[in-house]
Image (tube, rainbow, N blue to C red; front, side, top):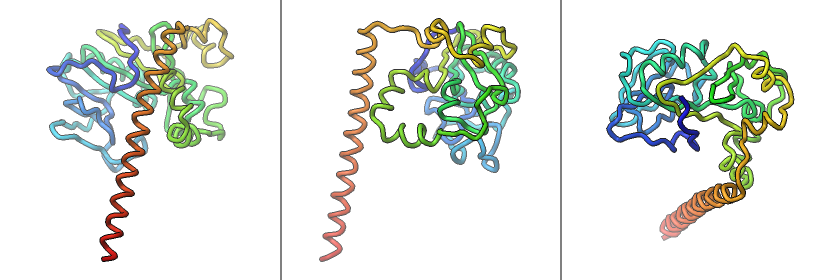
Length: 259
């Protein structure tokens, strides 16, 4: 059952006493996770940006997310971010998540995100349609994986250099990702109805757009914008101040070296 759409994986209300599992923590595990599972060791980093990292106090298991080595309800919460798009059987993977944990958080690239920021290693593309995670094989979707790739422009340039783009994604994260917090069950399907198939194969109607991006009030839109603007401003100011301190340190070292 869907209970929330968090802003990101750090916008989760996890009780400090809960036992938390993360599947596919990779090079950047969630700091709240007690146990980390990854399918591959450091000899296979094709799905990661670097070697596996295990934070102090975290326990690590090398295991397949489709066959987790844990008892039923062994965890209070499970986190899985940007893993489901890589797996062989998403339905079995989700079934295992729901078996070992009572609730959790799932994050995957959206259909639009896969067009804008494509990754060759992704096998599946997902949408949340009427509170169900709906998946389709990426290779079967027109225009994906055909050599046209602006991923670096959006992911490594605009996301770092453009304030306007950062504000857009901060206020409309659904453009790039599907985020889903669930309890008791997480509905998923890969055998699509004609209506669901249309989301992946045809231009969206007004109703389909509103299904994915519900209309907001002007008050909510302004609140989201100003909150995002304040957070981004603080981040940029801290970055500027940090750079200034580093330059001052370099100047100081340079002056001392001349003496």
